[in-house]
Image 1 (tube, one colour):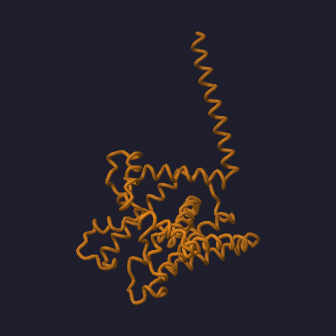
Image 2 (cartoon, one colour; image 1 turned 180 degrees about the horizontal axis):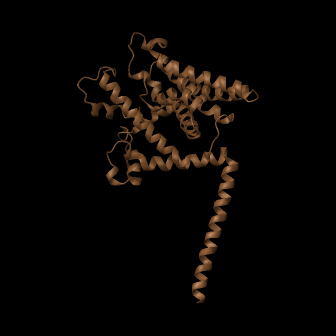
Image 3 (cartoon, one colour; image 1 turned 60 degrees about the horizontal axis):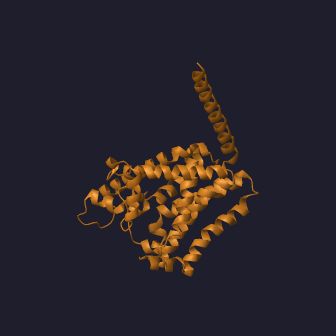
Length: 287
């Protein structure tokens, strides 16, 4: 799809509707739940995570475009959104603060941004609806716990988030290896495992995406040369910078009090260190 066609599809009334509904639901659920007890809030959000998990696992029975298919890779953790959908109920019940922060940031961005791109608009209407449903639910279950105060955002976790993301990329690759080995990835002819992983390329873990040469150039600018061509490592440095800086930005807003306190303490320590260095330097000059 060329640039002009992407712009045309982006402003198509149906795509505008698809983009609007998930965010309208987010606002609606927030107004509905904001004055409810934590028990009610948690029950509603957990129900939404289960609903999303079930529609993912049982899609071959729910959506008509998949009727007649046997269980296959599309019902597993084959991409980041699928992994987040499958992990959401467990993170909600048992997740640490780090995992809660991770799914808040990554799940919200993944759910929200996915309905804004246009590549999936080339699919039949029933697949478009499935796409919007699962990503709208991912957006709701990732963002609502944070804005309702169930998940506590901690900006100090920002530098750890990329490493969680790297771990998730490893899970995606392992998932693809397992589904390929079990033969549940559909008709791939004589495609080798390496060729299959390159084709799937979950979250660009294997290489830069086709048709986006600028991505490779940007990544190469930040990455050591010996990372080139190595799965996950090839984009690990710019990914670390992007996620960390983004998390700091969001953390400064949603964890404002702790961020201000830490920033003030850092300023005080820095000033004290500068004064100490100046004092020692001046004392040496006077000798």
